[in-house]
Image (cartoon, rainbow, N blue to C red; front, side, top):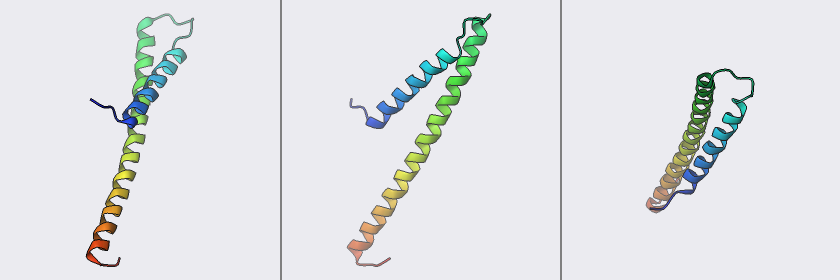
Length: 82
């Protein structure tokens, strides 16, 4: 099974965000491992949500461009001006 390039980039971004969030959420003075895990989970969820929104915007832009290109091609084939 082949991987799509945008999925690979997305996975790398998420992996980087996870490592940064774990480094930021792990100072030496913490008392509770559970609170550290909760904070890391919140940071990871927030980062994942931001990545998802960016992917949605990119997908919408690609979809609109493909639709416009398809309509232009269809009009060119039919001989209709727009």
